Length: 139
Image (cartoon, rainbow, N blue to C red; front, side):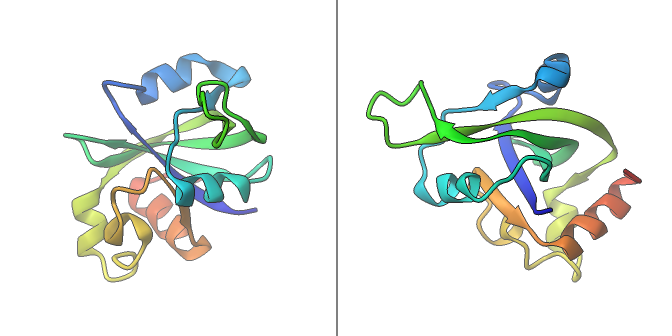
């Protein structure tokens, strides 16, 4: 299993909206960055991800699971990009902020700290474990 981080502005697509989609999940569409798209191409069903509110919040607020692998994104008129489908798994009991990530020597080298603009990014198993511990997630 691989781990990922999905970023969304809470005003555009929030964690609460994602949770309301339930087990059927929601397509993660609208990604128009080749590096982020390549990350989504590498995803497999069952992979886990952090749901990160960017914008004013800048914090990991939930856990998602990939339930549908990469396919064309119907919102891309040029047909260059795709999407994956994700479902909400659990709230992060204590949201983990970008400030915490950057201040923590065990995770301050992760993509989130170094390239915070990338909308879909990989997370190493060690980073996953450490952030879950910080956030009180035992799943």
